Image 1 (spheres, rainbow, N blue to C red):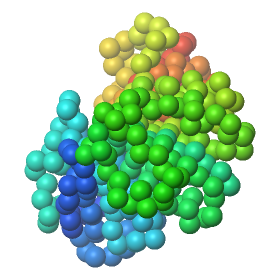
Image 2: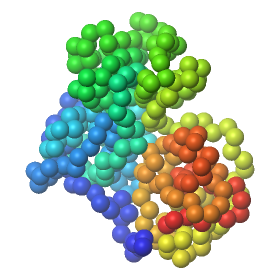
Image 3: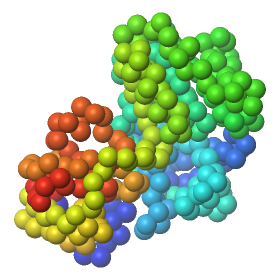
Length: 324
């Protein structure tokens, strides 16, 4: 049964207390943080593609990909880009956090896992290198064939260049001020259907990769840091949500969300981005037709109607029954 919060800070649920062990500038505008448990014990296991939530305040939770070594159970490493339009998360970490600072975190979770395979193509743009870097090392350790295409504004803005250049011509470093936009069709052309393609970076890059891979009939795995534009959503209308586990029926007004109304009712539901990108608030649908407005589910998952992101998605009918 879901727990009721009775005024408890929802973000504190299952949170780890971590200490900032090291901070370093790893690229222009990008810092690397090394986090360890405050009591010195081992951290939870993780796999390439995983991320954690940093809880920076009651209403300030941000997701960052782990980019260290999964075999290192004492440290977590993150790359934090100072976003020009920061809503508070990256600016706080860049300007307020110091060695010895205490941070709270949830996770890790992995919605961008590296599936076993023999051949990979990796594409990273900017800070999107953080999850891809761990995948490259895992593919290398497994003896797989792989190539990486990595773009950024300039070399000074691109993290991990020294480590990546050690792999020789399997890594194509393509800063935009030297090469222009990434030549995605040339990079993927000729790959067979058994080649797994992974991409992380800004929305224009991911959209371009989706188009290229569709043309080449290649399977593509992506992780977004920001929501993709929603162009096919209808007008917001009021609807009813039955919370099956809790035995509560809620009305979701046109100007609210399922997540907001569930929280008002005191039901414990984890969430992070509130934009439909991270997958934290995914819940199972027992009845009803969802109006998917997230940037997380695949087309097949959307079509199945089995789950939804309650931070942004709505209802195409008048009623949903959810497993919460």
